[in-house]
Length: 274
Image 1 (tube, rainbow, N blue to C red):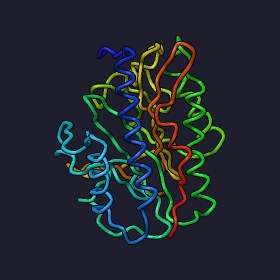
Image 2 (image 1 turned 135 degrees about the vertical axis):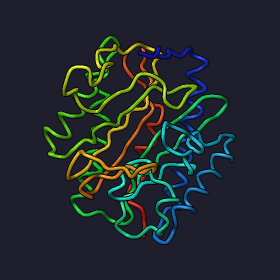
Image 3 (image 1 turned 60 degrees about the horizontal axis):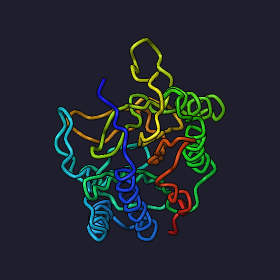
Image 4 (image 1 turned 180 degrees about the horizontal axis):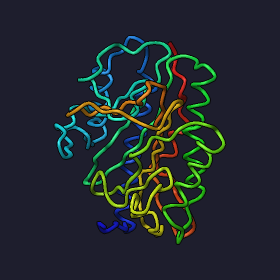
């Protein structure tokens, strides 16, 4: 298992500054995302806003095994595309009724902020509103379950019990949160569901320690938690084509509990004018 970074106070302040830039970018999204805007325009505005705040995208050019470098400033994913969407795979203008997930990663002074939020163009129908509310509620429930000395598993139990046990929705399998700091994806991996067999999630018994900084990100769909991905392509789609949401906060573990570095996202409107 990779070592899990524990940040000192100076490093935490640097991560706070990066997280503040991420919030600034989402504020821009709220102001500019409208029907008729294209993903390319929105992606360009993300890059410009990062630059205005002395930061740059930590997604652009990001590489993982077998995939080409990520081609966008942000992950912009629409409707059944739950994560890792980008303008190269979806250039249709946004339209009323779209559920748009915007995931922003900011690198500022060597430290990273990483947070996603879901926006609806126009007033959502009851099903979409319930799905969006579930994403936000699952973040809150999972974060409330985190206690110094507790296990990573506590997060997943709280999130899964709410989303699948109480709300009857589906958490996306195979994807989850991660540590964050100097690297985009630090240890540990943080699943949103309990492991279903021994060895599936080897870090689930790791204990929360003050100074750990993690990006926590439930991904939820109405129809299934299974996904599809074309060969050598980034976007992850819900297998049955159902609607999906993605919400992500940067969360610091403290001596007494947690501090949400991107909490200001919750004060932004997520139903945008048309």
